[in-house]
Structures are given as structure tokens and as C-alpha cells.
Length: 474
Image 1 (cartoon, rainbow, N blue to C red):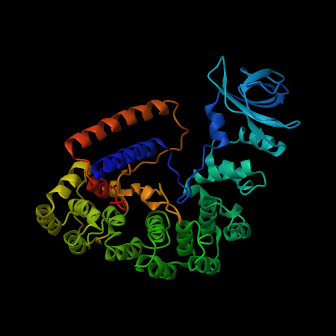
Image 2 (image 1 turned 120 degrees about the vertical axis):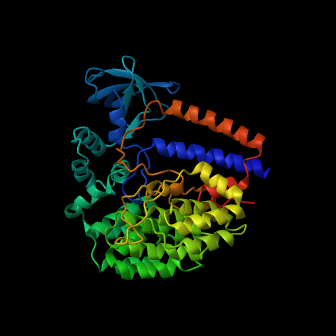
Image 3 (image 1 turned 30 degrees about the vertical axis):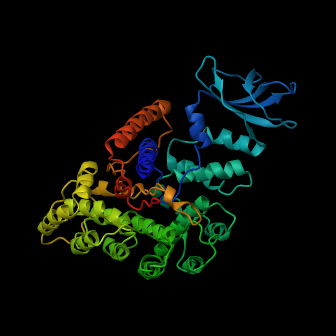
């Protein structure tokens, strides 16, 4: 039964990874877009229009709409035109709707979206926005936390998929007092609070760190929502002194909850790549504290390798030798760290560890091709710059962000599974062939599940050691 459970989890992980490969990269460090934005949806469509419903009978499955304004596709739809669309709701009075259609000449219409007069002005405006992302963000900035929930959510989604570098360029346009008010609001969704914390890191003052420190020390989970972004913002405003508190509260503290520690690790990844506040050596000092917590060490080993910190060979070898049922998943990351290390002592340790656990060695070499790093010169430090052939060992993109109160066992840190390609991935709308891709993925993973079950290779440890941080029930 445990073998079958492991196989099912393996298939789920495979589908999740495939989805991430085909999705856009959210460049705002801690933000996740809730859905496609209205602009992205309309870009996918052949026609878009504002219309109102023509009263019909109670039993009508199709509703007749009359077009008032054409947003997109002037040659396909015109003002005053009447069109049939599936709609099962009830419209009140002069309620307006956004209709979007695809595949002419017989357009297939999406579900009508009720919109206010303010939303209509918004939709008409975004259809005319320039292609340059930074210029669009100037427009969306005024709609953050707008009283119309549709506009507030859409503006957030636009920022969530915006490059962090462009967020920084908006510094002069940001309202610091508004950001502080939103951050204090415990009713805001954590994702939105993350965005405002990232923005506060751009425009905030040193004194704002006092508020964040109070929230970090709070026992109220609502006040600490968006903890990863909160920690990153605090370090940005406070610098090295701020990181010392984070070490004490979340990294060196063995009583710190898994979600809180993982949030701190996510913030360290940000500061090791994009923060530009602390030297990478200082960030690594904090990362290494996790190695003293064997059950969590696998979360940071890929980061040490990616940043070419080869000072931990002895410590990691001890972790490998001392691994038990509660920390056995640390072995594959340790092997990969040693495989990537160019130092001769790493090769020696690797040979010894292979004798201790040949199965872990086989899994590491089968699933993780690791390029060998170039040995450091005498003039260089043991921690090299970011440009490295080892970037694929871990990713700085926060695909999954644990939040207090969630089922952490169902969350997969993809950092050491999905390799970083070392290129900038443009933010693109979903491909219409996505459904075909999903079907192919499911077919392959089902075949893999059958093979693993028949061969007996689908053991529990396969999932545990492939994915750092994975905790499966016995």
C-alpha cells in the first residue's frame, strides 16, 4: 500500500512540475497571480464587448444580449448587435456585462462577466495601454485595493506578474502611508499583503522596521500573514542587524515551526539573488544555520551548491552518515552537492558515501545531472558570484509559499527539481494547446506509475529524496 501511495505522489509531483514548466514566471519575488488578468484574457480573444441582457423567459438557457460598446474585434461584432450567450443568472435593471468571444466567424462566447460603470471605464482604458510593462503598472497602481473588488483583484494580478526590477522603478509613484495601512490590515488576503510588503521594501524608511519587528514577534497568525515577504522587507530596511533577529527567531531556533522556517529560507533566497542589501557571504551564514537542523537541512543544501559554497563538505558528510528515518531525504541533496563540488576532498567523500547507501547514490545520479563546477582560483573566495553553471541545482522562484494553517505535506518546494534555465522567461498568456499538453503529460505519468508499481521501484524514499522538504506520512 505504501508503494502505491508513493507512486501516486510521484505522479502528482510530475504533473505539478510539468504545469510549472508551461506557466509564466511570477517575477514579483513573493507574489502569485490569482488568475489571468482582464488584459491577458482579452488579448487571447478575438472579440470583446460591453453588453446588457435583453429580458427573456425564466426557462431560457440562452440569453440574448445587446452590444453597447465594442472593445476588441470591430470587424466581428458591432454596437447594437444582438447575440446569444449561455447565461443562467439573473440580471438586475441595467446591469452591464463584459462578453469575450473566440474562433470566428461563429464566435464562442465566454460566460458573461457583470461589470460596474467604473469597471467599464477601466476595461476600456486597459485595452489602450501601451505594450511596455512599466507604463502599464503606472496605470494599475491607482487601482490597488480599489472599492470595486474586480478592479482591485485585477490590479494585484498585474503586479504579481510584473518584473521586480520594474517594481523598483515605480518607487517615486508609491504611497508609503497607504502601504503601511494595508500591511496593518489583518483582513487582507496574504498574497496581497506580500505585494505591499515587497513594495514597502522599495519605498519604506528605516523606522518602518519597528512595525515589522512587532509583527514578526506576534503570536497572532493573522498579523504574520505573508511572513516570507515580511521577513524580506524587514531585512531590506534593517540590513545585517535585521538578519540577526531572523536567525534567532526562525533559523537557529529549533522550536520554530516548519512554515516559519521555510518562509525565512525563501526570504534568504531573495536576498541572495535580488535583494542587493547584504553580501552573499552573509546570507550564506544564515543559510548554514539550517544544517544544524537535520530534518530541514535538505531545504538549503541545493542553495549552498548553487552559490558554490564548498565550505560545508565535512558537515554534510556527517549529516549523510547520521541520517535516520526522520532525515533520510537529506542523502540525495548531499550527494548532488558533492558531485557538483570541484574540490578533491568532495570526490573522496563521495566514494565513501556511495558505499554506505548505493541506492541513494543511484537515485541522485539518475534523476539529477549535475555539471561540475570550475575549481576556484587562489584569488577567489569559496563563494563565487551568481553566474555559475550550477544554477539548476535550486531555483530562486518561490513557486509554493507555505502559510501557517495550511497542509504543508501537500506543498512541494520545487527549488531543487525544476532547473533554472539561466534565461529570462517572458510572461506569456497560456497556449491554446495546453489541454493537449496536459493529456500527453497524464498519459506519460500513468505509464510511469504502472512501470514503478510493476518493477517495485516506486518506493516511499523515491519521493522523499527527489523533492527536498517533502514529508510523507508513514
